[in-house]
Image: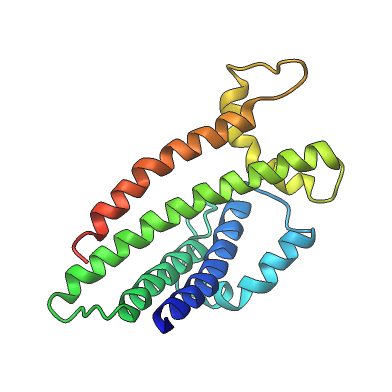
Length: 190
């Protein structure tokens, strides 16, 4: 019972921090505006980690690598703590264990990025129906536009309804299936 509570707390705290870091990374990558309530929240929650990390991890061609590396390191720590809570010992081969944890963390970042994309698409669609001129529209538009553009080239709107969000969510869910299988395969030694 205590292990389940500990795992819940690890998933919640580390999940929140990793999602915030991923949102910050993608907002910078896709040039989404930060001058809005969501952007200000993301900056306020993550600056205490990102600003010191930028001293050691430089950016690369506009990519905020420090944010991405921090998310990856937090995922490694979350996996490590999760295994530790279940009583797993890494004494036999710590190098192999770290390699497996690093791979699991990368796969988890990919999975969380896909869930983030699905969530952003759903919120963007709902906002476009309910309140298309809200202050949050530019953020969601910037985060979804590159993915919609792929489908908008080939699928025109039907009756003024854009079906590209549906295809983005569908493709993301399809990619999640082999990603889950790959994660299980990588985690199988543990």
